[in-house]
Image (cartoon, rainbow, N blue to C red; front, side):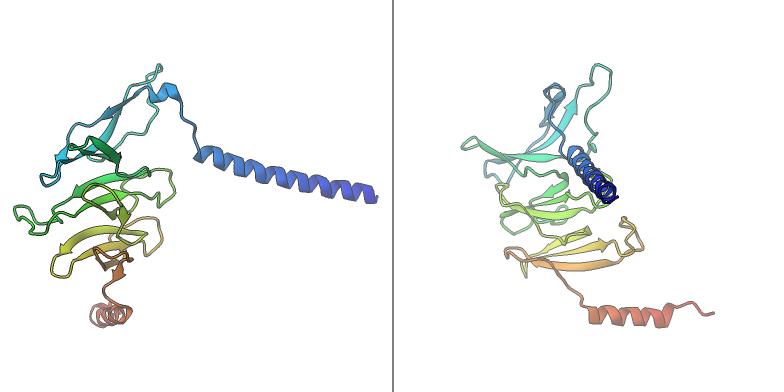
Length: 242
């Protein structure tokens, strides 16, 4: 009788371990896909436009990618947005040295090296930085990086090196501006306040600042004391009367 009980416990333990390993392996296989030389050959690198940064001889080549259909007329890769880029090549035309902006998975929405000055207004600030609006996080875990995920603000030096995120994690940036007098970036960003995996018009929008040349995290401008006061004032003046 003891042998039967021992055998049952051992069988149950082995089955449990097997299920755990199955789960782990299936997760690993889904997140680490191997490259297929045949599908890679169907890719067409596209550097259709480029920009020189302030007559420095440094050129930016935003990257898109075309693809040929497979034999069964299907496509192996997700379609990129027409106005987005998946990376940028920086070329120093004086030395012919080049490098990628990043080797991480990102969707570059926009880049800017005139410190986000208004159109028609030239910035007196010397170009030492390049700013990028990017999506880099699959926030809602749908295995896609698209307009449902937050846009973050990044900055690099003018040669496209030392890339870093300067907007807060898990906040979708709405607007940003360089304030020359204080050497700060001030930005507004939306938080997923109701935790529905969306950044919508009912969520909280906060204001952050960061000193551009300091290795620090962005700080919220308006503190909890002011926020509490604003909520109480709104509650006093705009609450429905029953």
